[in-house]
Length: 146
Image (spheres, rainbow, N blue to C red):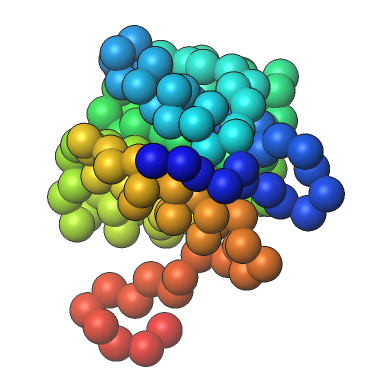
């Protein structure tokens, strides 16, 4: 399938930080990102490395696994967003428990993608988080109003 290159404002290429403890998963995600016209700014295998890489590379989007050694993805999201409120982070995980998704969104992640990742759905989610309205959807536990 052919994808129209992702854009954001007048940037020629969207820069991605790919964070996953599985080298296979990282390489797979990197291939998809490149097929979408994106550029890999860096890779990390755990949350601690993700924070450091984020500070070094300042990517446009972080694709973050949840379950990792040393520091979980949700904790890394909290650290990154605390220091960089503009950070755009999409969780990519096979652990799709409602509590994890909710926690990640509350800590500042913009969206969630379930593994195994389907390129078409992944592309649409990335396009969505790059859109004019980068704010996450409001999270209201219990369905009530916040």
